[in-house]
Image (cartoon, rainbow, N blue to C red; front, top):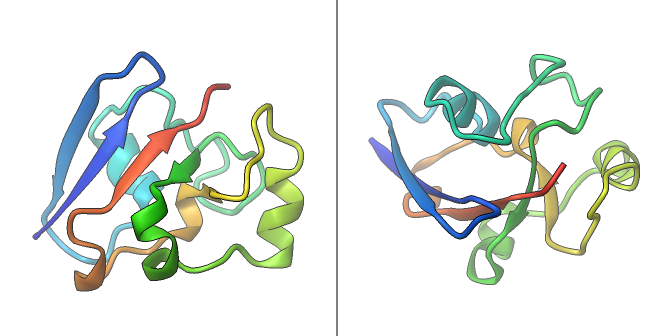
Length: 105
């Protein structure tokens, strides 16, 4: 089981526990009803409604966005160097405790 912390735009933090490491940040957040994690495209990197900002201490563990992901992030309202699409961050034991901020839409 992995715990992921979602920081909401208003400052509230929701800590969600995933029962498996087969989730993405988007799937876990959507299933838990995290506000702002919509996932309209179902995780196919076509909508950016799962845009998050990865906490600095987690950037290396999460890794960089692909060129395709970067192109989608560039279309969002708040693209930053720490931006990722939640559908492209797949959970694994090394991400237990991951902190992401839900990007404003």
